[in-house]
Amino acid sequence: MALFIVMLLLVNANFMEGPANTLTYSAFTDISNGISTRIVDTYAIAPDTGNITSRFDIPDDIAGREYFVEIGNTASDDTTAQTVTVSRGSIVTNVAIAGIGSTRRAGGNTTGTGMNRISYDSGGF
Image (cartoon, rainbow, N blue to C red; front, top):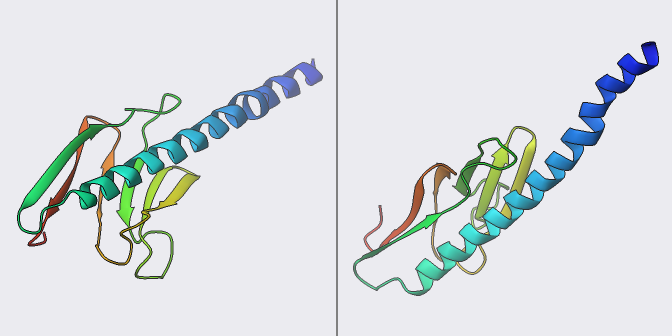
């Protein structure tokens, strides 16, 4: 009976949470890469004067739970390094915004819920 109770306690931690955390980390990396690409694409077609807004959708939840997205200088003290950070609890991914890190500042945050947008304004925000 004691062995059965111990096994019940270990099954959830080892056989369910481990694979769910691995799946979550991979999904967070994919979401970070997608958002980074959208930011760079918006910058590539941005007008010299004026503004542009792009709307996109990311998954509402990963493995049945919500997550948070933050864009900006979140991973290091280097002021030119900009990242897309997707996190939930102890699971965190940081992906660099390649190509515009030192020339343009990007910043903001969102969640997976609803429609999201990326905006560029030549006059700044």
